[in-house]
Amino acid sequence: MPTGANRYDASLAQLKRAEAVIPLGAQTVSKSRLTLPAGIAPLYGSRAEGCRITDLDGHEYVDLISGLAAINIGYGDPDITAAVVNQVPLGVTISLTHPIETEVAQLIVDLVPSAEMVRFGKNGSDATSAAIRVARGYTGRDHVVVCGYHGWHDWYIGTSPTRNLGVPDDVAALAHSVPFNDLAAMEAALMAHPTAAIIMEIMTVEWPAEGYLQGVRDLATKYGALLVFDEMVTGFRFSNGGAQEYFGVTPDLSTFGKGMANGYPLSAIVGKREYMMVLEKAFFTGTFGGELLSLTAAKVVLERIKSTDVISRISAKGEKLANLVNQVIRDAGAEHVVSLQGHPSWMFLVWNPELGDQLADLKILFMQEMCRRGVLMIATHNVMDAHDELAMKTIADAYAGTLPIILEAIAAGDARDRLDAEVPELGPRVR
Ligand SMILES: Cc1ncc(COP(=O)(O)O)c(C=O)c1O
Image (cartoon, rainbow, N blue to C red; front, side):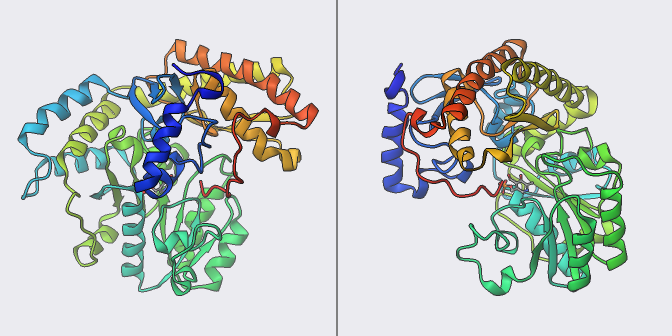
């Protein structure tokens, strides 16, 4: 297994082969060299089991990326695998609609407060785009207010100054991005444009201020816009019924994906019947919408969520991990450099913005040193039920080894010199 400067030889060789035939060498921007810099972190993986992932060079990591938060149970859960394997010989994509669609839809209706009806897609972007189509169809309005990240489709990504290449200006002009926890900005946007929908992530790094979510709910009603909660990450993670149940505010529509099927490709738009019935006329369809392996996986996941305490266990594990890491941060004397913020199941490592120009290099140095110590992490703890005691110890030890290096690099102002590879300037991340 290569170490030192050769640690990622196999990943780097694979990157070369991949870049010859695949733009970016990856299908997912957050798994590409734009996020995991070449020579600093592994780029290619060979297998994942439980809470651990093995890279192409044979190093094993405790995984805190967790398939970009798509894994909430764990890799290769035996019950999910058995159900999927049993389904394979019976058909994956068949020519008729299968009853399991109704079964999984019913489970979601049972769990999610805003869900009276459900339609499935494959990616989260399918579901968020469907929600915007429904809202536009229902209200007869074109403008949308967005708050958070909602996928790669034109209607949303046109709001990103760095990722909007290829989006027509006329389309981009219909979406208006507002900051989180700012009701005045939200109301100003609603006053400026006849708005079909407010679509928002209920919470990322920052907790919603007292009354904020209810305030958004009231504004949506006042201005005749549909309220869409994008629960791609928070759904089946914050609580059984998602962040909407956790915070007690019910939207008109919501969107789910990621943890719903523990990594199998499935997303959903759900909502009140009155709005969802727009989908009998508005066009939302896909050859793979009823693909049976993902629905089979979702059925096992959702039944487990309904009948066990798995979701609260994920939060409890996240809290335990945060306590351990906070102790390490204190012991290292690094409280002025980093802190953990967010919901226990999805904690963000937040850096002191006063570090200014050094920050980009420090974040990469952090990734490099955590990887060397067997932890794969970008900027968040994406907790899964499979994270065990040993994994938590590995993570705490990795922080304990990494933070002193970060402090030394800050003191000497030499973070860049400590990197194993030259890293091109990374663009701002959209998520
Ligand atoms: C909140 C949110 N909405 C939408 C999406 C888009 O989902 P997908 O990448 O599956 O299309 C994501 C993906 O990270 C997300 O986090």
